[in-house]
Length: 173
Image 1 (spheres, rainbow, N blue to C red):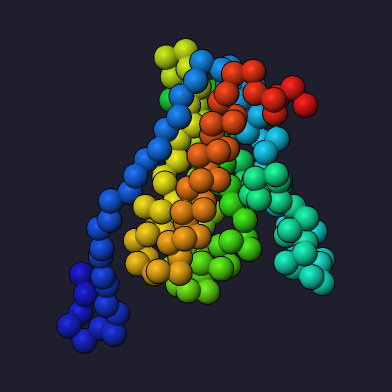
Image 2: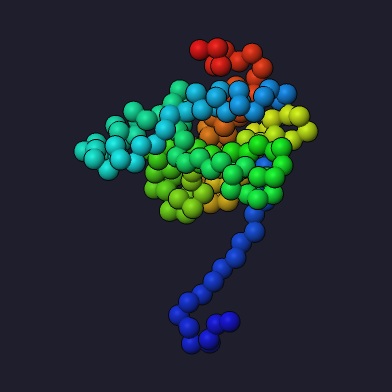
């Protein structure tokens, strides 16, 4: 409840977000390996000691141009999953250089970056789900952010398809 003399105001906006899910019979552990092989890893220690932040970030990118920022092993965090056969791992996946480009146009981009990806099992299948970047960042209604988000749409779809592909050449390497 706000006082009539308060200097604080609030605003709420509702937007539609598109959830994208890809599904395969490929085993969960193989999907995890093939997903992670396409990504680099953020090394915060290396970043904090770097004199050239953009170059340091660039060196952490995977073949996809993206990196794992954090991993949450959901099957160990959620009691409902701990007692079930469901496997689940959540990733924060992105690239600080890409997020920085978007935040330069609208600081709210930092609220949605990095995007989350959930890899999980259901009904003898492995799924990869994420919120479509153009629907997430599109709510910022900035014409400079939209093409960056569209590029992320393609990157995330490629990550998912390659990780879930049975007999993927990624897994063989």
